[in-house]
Image (cartoon, rainbow, N blue to C red):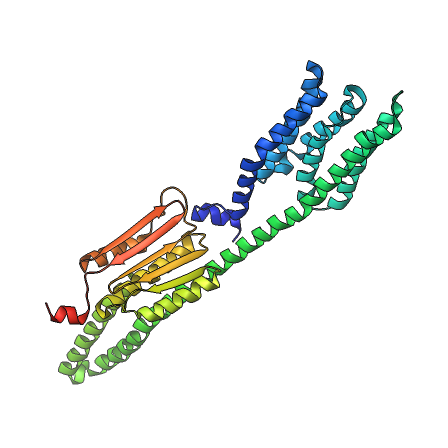
Length: 381
């Protein structure tokens, strides 16, 4: 399950997209300022300003599309514009600063290409150097000044800019790999939860169906020879099926008796398997009367976090008759429809308790409080 699909289904943005948006916020003003300085330095007429400005705009477009992960869509026109403006600046405008636009576009485009990246990096650097050296073809030019201003400085900065983008690209690749691995772990954790549910369902129905089969066969044999015994067997089958239906409904609506300690350990294992740090705080021993329902809330909340959030931290707090689960990585905007919690809210309300669900700035809270107290306190009432 890739990060883009996880973002669309879970409502959260992948870390790679968040990093690129952060880059857009931080560096776009700096690039605009750098472009303004280039124009102020080299553009001495309106037509020079227009041509050099086209190179600046191409560089900004490449950066903006790179932050959106779509730089290859504008790669060719941006490279053509900045590549043509550089010799114009060297030979016509007598400017040496606009190469930074070509260096920026090349640094955004080349590392994103599927192959021949190193060759193209050397080709871009060589092109910048060759165009700068063509300045020597003009008369009355000092060789040292030309080599420093038009060759060494532009070539060195271009090479460094492109070279630094390669480890930066690798960093984004690692972030993507980690996100995909985490998504796979979360998906596997949900699958394991489903398998466990299937096991519980088998425990409820498997034995019952086998017994029903045997009693039905017995009733068929007795129907002619011992009608009363056959009737008794049919009554037992009816009672057994009714009980199984009740247990299945309880399982479907998370009302089957659970062990809170086992659910805590299971939740810890699931979160850790998904790369989520979990902290459990026990403020008091949980009342036995509240343990089962709180375990149901914990199980449903664990599944929701794995399915709907991009969580990195989860905090579980237990008191005598309440549980609070807080996780980060929640989607922005309206929370998803959580049918399991909606069913549990009715169950908690039926026991006189409250189930609270809150979402705020990427933080999701699920809290259940029940009107139980310690046995000693109940005895003293």
